Length: 256
Image (cartoon, rainbow, N blue to C red; front, top):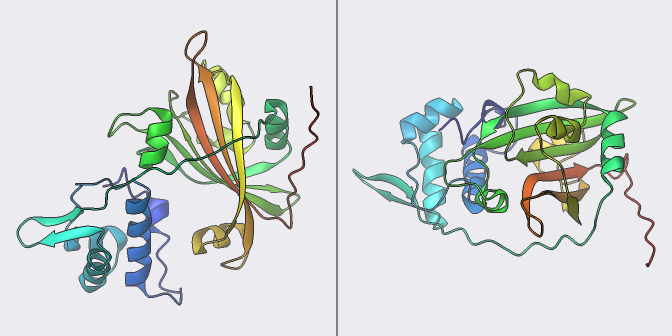
């Protein structure tokens, strides 16, 4: 299950948190079931394996699994294990804003990134569908926090299809990902973006140094590549959570 639960994800469970460990594990598993990362019909690890993976007691693992069952997300049968019975259903996403690639690269060059997690991993189902990946096909995953002048202003989660993981991932600390894409032969044809507001969960709050529940500006960006004279395909999915105290997003639009 390492392709679904990275070491960074496992480390999100904290004994110092006021939230009980079983509920932390339940919430982590629930989120990945609801977003399609753990797909319908998949068999989850046995309680002993789950306890070993997340370094918790078997009682903690059992209670988390029992709560998933109570919410109708999994089915537990003696001798057959625990299977996901939640059927993921995609929701429509609208991205009406077009970004400037030069501005994207400029922001990357004028800030630095701390890499929290990386690797070739299985994306959530909605992102797999966006990237047109088959079941079990991995994409390059990066989890980063960007800062400028000592201020952490953005939490970045990205999934990219059609590229290999570089031998030295530290290049993403100061080099724009778009530059690496070009080196890999991927040219972005256009970008769509959606802006909304969200509250910080415990993991993002810790990464950005804000309190849990703090308001954040959420930007979802899809970058496309051309696959023919009149067709395009999403090659990169990026979600950024900005701390509004250290970041502003402004636009100057004109009518043609």
